[in-house]
Image 1 (tube, rainbow, N blue to C red):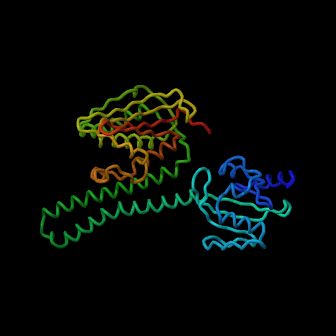
Image 2: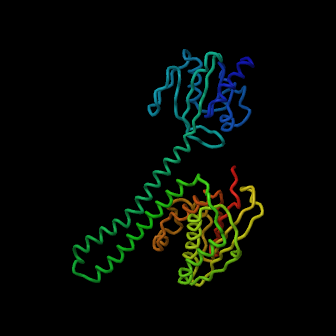
Image 3: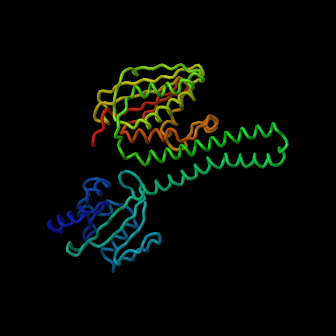
Length: 369
């Protein structure tokens, strides 16, 4: 194939947003757009196509498009729309970017002006598949979280209408339990609504400013009764004075209330809660100065294997204990999304029997990048 034809093929592929390769009549790669290079790596040109995408069904589709009279037509994929004549659409698990991806692949003839050959377009469906799986898991988790208290309440109602109809002690005990379960469902619904709002706003940067030390002092004052009831000594550092940064006041209050509540739940009675504010001169990921808030306790700590999953929805280290203390399993997920909206970072450090430290790092200024 001439250099002019190859340049034309490059120009043709460059306007395509999905990864796309072009091969000549000998099934050698003659062009690849930037998305394909990102997916399969550099040095794709002048290589046999089979060395770029090693999948028998895809290779067979390329062979058929190039030489339909010499190769059998690939069977149609019933899950995909019927492609135009001379075009093959199929789904395949392919290795790209060092991982297995579920891809929808379309093989079509090159435009006649470019000579004999074929184009191969690859649409990565892995993200969509993962999102669908997350949606199914989320619905299943919400259903489970609501079904458990509802089942208990229905059982108590039946008992109150039957065997316990004339038993005042049983009635009062069952009503107390039903009230607790109803409150737990109410908290769950409130957290679900909060999570939905936070996710809807995650791409919108905060437009107001907050005084972070003043906010932290206010959160601690609001929770003073809870810290006293837990028998926890509060130690603060760096909360004097005033430091302004861009942020949503209500959402950041929610972040620090949630983290302090968690620390109080898991700090041992008579234990320690630390709230420290410090300035970072240069935070590499934020490309500038940042403020970090460390919330630490000296409680029982968390096994390190749980740390990567703590911010997942409904993930609990101790399911029974979390429910008994009124947890919904959504608090840290909400915290993560709020911190993301503020272009910040959430770091979690913990060791068994040594306590935990949750660090929220927020940029002093929000850049346009």
